[in-house]
Image (tube, rainbow, N blue to C red; front, side, top):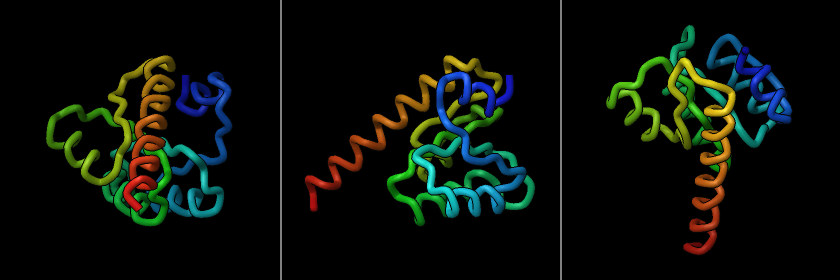
Amino acid sequence: MTLRAMLRHAGLEVVGEAPSAEQGLELVRRHQPEVVCIDVVLPGMDGIAALGVLRGEFPALTAVAVTGQSDRDTVTRLISQGADGVVVKPFSAARLIEEIGRARGLRAGRRAAEGEVK
């Protein structure tokens, strides 16, 4: 099952899909979704760099990275660039949806904490 199919099967609306980080960034700018799933390995700019751009432009966005690389360095870089969650390939639809839910809760908690600080 494709990522798009997994998300739709779970009742989530998919507003776009892009073959590159640059095109993905444009889709996010146009549609401003609540959640983005981004692959790490992409042509041109990689997903880790794209996460940094997304986090700078859309600090409230929930970002879940999808990767085949589960080494500590990759996961640390993803988190440092703003990933709220990480799903390692191969994964099931249940695992993806669980991680999106966890990441959304984490992002909501961060927004609430920032609101308390201000």
